[in-house]
Length: 67
Image (tube, rainbow, N blue to C red; front, top):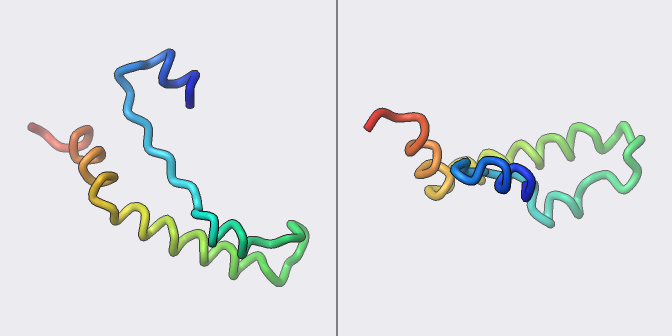
C-alpha cells in the first residue's frame, strides 16, 4: 500500500480485510476440507458488513458518481 500511495498520491485506497474474529476462526490447518466452507462464509459475511459502512460508500460515491 505504501508503494501505491507513494506512486499515485491522488489515489484513494480501500482495503477490505477480515477482522481478527474471522481470522481467528479461520482454519488452523489450511488443508482442512471441513473448514473451507465455514471460513469462506464467515469471510463473506464480514466483507458484506464492511462494504455497508458509510466511510466505504462515501469513498465509492466520490469516485463512481457524477457530480
